[in-house]
Image (cartoon, rainbow, N blue to C red):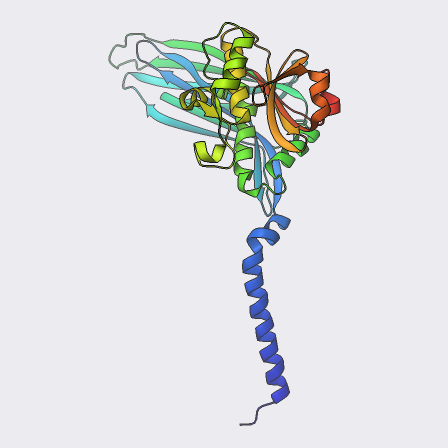
Length: 353
């Protein structure tokens, strides 16, 4: 059999090229190709859980009603508004019929109805609602109120055993007000979630910001030192809380410790110190508006506390007017108090705020 040498050479070269491209794709896909084509889509989730019980008499209790700003990351993410309803530990008594009706109504700032959803369920137990808002009806940056009007109706069987409470119909209303992320906030948050050069910490930063959006500073400010003055608490955090990095204390590159964790270890880095300091001011009613601020000082990540027009930096034992301290600040990330959280843009915009 005769072989075409030129054709064999072409086929051979093509095979080598395809194999090389395949290997290259396998190597580069996780680092370059997938991040380049992966997109992010922000959406808002509202989770509400109600417990319909008959322990002594029928009742409705709210177990949770939270609003979460979330992000979907995929090659072609597609988020649509939806409502999911789940029932847990469902119990149907032999004495009658239990009906549970919930109307979820979304109101704008003027009190007008934007959207509503009605759910009919049966039986006692937990009722969980998961509402996804994808921006097709609701406007970013606008403030809304979601109101759950829940009605429980128990109808005994005519020929059934006698119940303790007979026929029951009761209604309860639960609501929460929230603001959808606007475009600038999403862009800034996206920058923190996908910080260049911080790939190892990407998941942690995303978790951190989610916690702050949902719980504000209350998640971290869970303990206090026993001091009755700002100066006494500051001096103790400066001198008696040793400075140790997160990797040594917690085994990871970045970690925001709760105040109770820093008290237990007697050590922490800059954000751990200021969280403990601010938490003490809050729980001892020394200053409940003290802000933990995270940014960069002279190009290096840092954290400090702002009380009025002054900055308290327990890591460097500095108490200075805010206007003086801010001459060294190059980047601002965010701040939080016990019940507030906000992303920041730059030092100039925040001086005097």
